[in-house]
Length: 155
Image 1 (cartoon, rainbow, N blue to C red):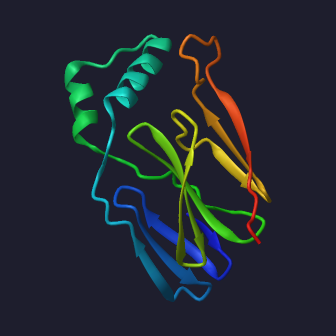
Image 2 (image 1 turned 45 degrees about the vertical axis):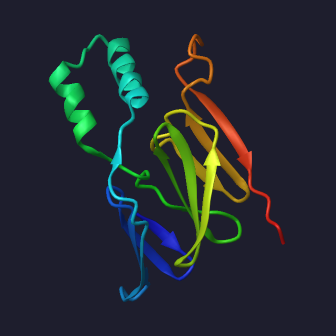
């Protein structure tokens, strides 16, 4: 999935579990969020239905129910490091985007990101986080917008 300053990280986005390994392959730490399964919100399912309609497809009631029943990923499969070597994961829960940030295998916390439907469309370089979101205005003619956030350190 990605690297941290001491090795690499493997994770399960369905259970929000991460394994931190050193470069020799030895497991250094395991992090488990312990929040249970993530579910798609009704708003997220309706956004998916609207996206399908844009390309001329529909979702049957059975398919919509399957989406309600299945576990949604907590975070995208990308892991990135910022300019201070902190590890970032971006995810979505109940229609709200977030960033979970780590220093090595130590969890620093969660930052909320004002973005609709962030999915896997994000990147991090130095002190800049870029995310591709659905427009804030539902009547917008745009498919997506890019939001940039500057990461400012406290010290």
